[in-house]
Amino acid sequence: MLIYLINKGIKRVLKEKNISVVMSVYKNDDTAFFEEAIKSILNQSYLPVEIIIVVDGPVSKAINELLVFYENEKLFKIIRLSENKGLANALNIGIAEAKGNYIARMDSDDICFEDRFKKQIDFIVKENLDIVGGQIIEFGNNIEDVVSFRKVPLEHSEMINFMKVRSPFSHPTILFRKEVFWGLNGYDVSIFPEDYDFFVRAYLKGYKFGNIDENVLWFRLGADRSKAIKRRWGMAYAKNEMKLYKNFLKLGFYSYPDFIKVLCVKIPLRILPFSLYKFIYFRILRNNN
Image (cartoon, rainbow, N blue to C red; front, side, top):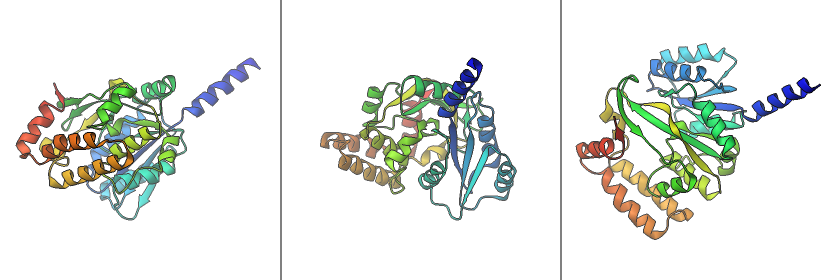
């Protein structure tokens, strides 16, 4: 009887700590990198109960063949969308279908450290948090080609101060309670960057944050590092940021002094000559090896 009760208790605890991994793949993703990302999930010391892959519109023949292979595996759930509508939409659809109590984000070309989920699930439960992330190592085409490190703050209060200017999480590293998703009605598909907005709204709803002080993910920049960071530069990105900051002001996260400060700091940065922006990104905004 005692053994039965112990086993029942273990099963209950494990059930309460179920993780659903949600990732998106689209036509421009590299098949080899995608497969490497999946393998890093399958090699976790703490396995998820499912891996949900949202296929965001038509994909290449090679990616589709890989998806067909995984479609026959019990652990995988493949959701195919007829057209590409972006990451926020794909995540909303995937997370809504998840059966786990915790959601782990994963991008289609990154690589998890093998103990990522174990460390994060232990941390979120022990500290009674709602969203946790971790530190990342940015690399080129392979993990021997280390480019830089992104270090994010650890404690909730420190993260909120940091969030006045920058996102307090590296989005591909986060693990969060599914109730957060429902509490926020998911990602806002009209806002970019959608993750930054998600975190601000989560804070305003009273959810608690934390980052573990360890690397949990290899973040792929690819062979062309300039191309990878150009997505965060230019007038179009600056306009999106302006819209985001106006929304933060409307939500009450920013005071008017906060709003003016962030405009003066961030918007000019996005429209600098690209060579100068690249220098600031790698030499100031990141810790280089």
